[in-house]
Length: 138
Image (cartoon, rainbow, N blue to C red; front, side, top):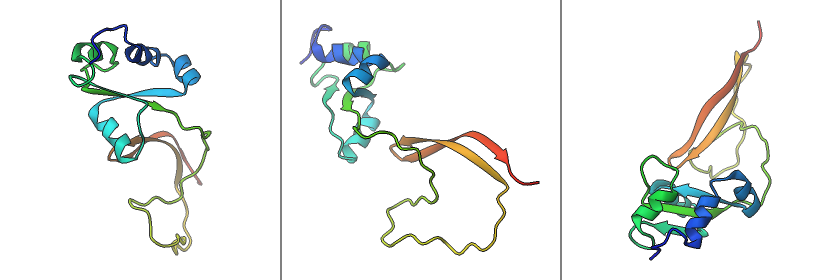
């Protein structure tokens, strides 16, 4: 049980609040049971897992949290080693299709606008925010 704010794991969580440390160490912090559970479901193992009342005092966990309400759990995870790849999503399925994706027979169509979206991953699926939208054509 972690009972000192000078514990190395708590120091690590505090360091990772700074982007320079996240970049240098290749680690990031996830706060809250839902996000840690989403990582577990995706088979992503934490480097460190701090659970209030189990392996760290709740008050100490609250001190290192960036949230308004202290989480019950904080996980430290390793960033992916692959670089970010810009892309355009043409089709998206709720579940992985069991057959090859063939473009649908759409006939002729005239798009009215185009938009750039920011995709944010959540445990219940991606959420999209329109960054920019522009009308096309006349």
